[in-house]
Length: 275
Picture 1: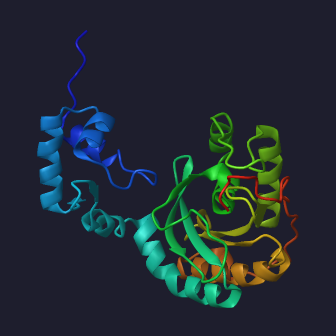
Picture 2: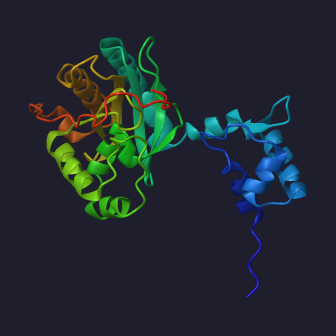
């Protein structure tokens, strides 16, 4: 049977889909090859996308995502509107803990950072606004995964779980136990999970039906702060955002959290691995 030709919309989406965190700027030939389109079709669609504002063309001839896409992204209820509500509280949190702050929402098997505030003179992390990481590889992602349905958790656990460091949670049984601990305590605390030498702490944010809709996380250098000194401010921030989103439980008394840190199995940075 003859395969169906892709529609115009599919061709456009295939072009936009070639860009990611590791490919922010691409040439015509690179886009053509990655999208599986001819050079002439790619060139025509690139011009149309550039005129509309979805792409920009640099002086070296390479293309990258344009501001029109960012503008549309801010209209997403689970992203832009949440960010607008949460941003004042996130700034207050950053002032209190002086750490990198991340606001993440789920998207399939990934967490997407709809906001990422960088603190001065702190640990460098690969996260950024609009960045995407697997749920099992970050503190915010683990919080979101812990509060998802059992069926979805098993779906994620059955997939390929990439290890970014020797400490990344990739064993399904160990991950199940950790997720149960996060659900019980309401806090995810991991060290060197995505990047060596980084302590990550994350807590859930709830929406109008008390469903977990996002997670707020912070990252600090390992050994620079105790999780117990960070969680109260984070819990207050998450509670304030949840209250603004209409979460019924945000008005209830705050239980005393109990949790344990999943410590790094390799606290030192291996040769050649950036911190």
